[in-house]
Length: 229
Image (cartoon, rainbow, N blue to C red; front, side):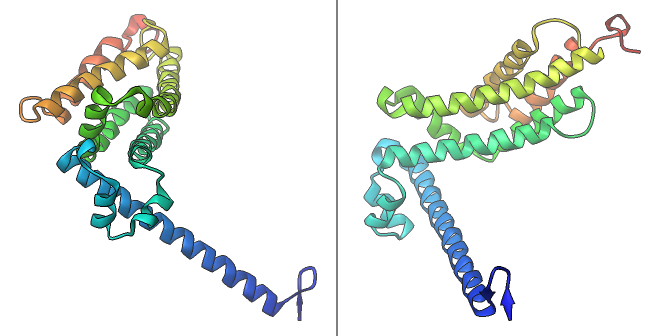
């Protein structure tokens, strides 16, 4: 029996089997990449970026050094992948939070809660990133900065749209431009992040972020004079 455009059943089965093999290989490649990245993250966290070699990463992840170089050209590229993976995770999760149901003030709270969860689940990577940002050479960071900044700019503009929408509805006061409101909120939350990383017991991030949400929203929410009934 012929199948669409003269393809036999055998040919169809062979094509499906080939596609299945490619999909399995792609999944396996992603799994191995994740193993390498997880191992590198642990080693960077325990010993510092500059004290870990590609040979050590290969040994600890149980891959040959040749296989490791098939995935990453060098240690800097591996580190770059770690940072970009975290940034993409954050961009996706925070954008989802800002796209959820509810009024704009609820979306801002959802964004702050999502940001807190992601940051608290990625403390080792955050510590490595801040250490590298302060101490890394410009050559290592230049290409990375461009892509991270592009993602961050997209997110700021997404957050600004929430402030813009809330202002149009009369939920928020007409104060700063929406983009600058987004920058202000991000700056405040990041300041508390730095404090928390330095002394988690003294500066608990979750509690502080809840306080920031209350402080920020209470000061920008419009009353009857804002035109909202």
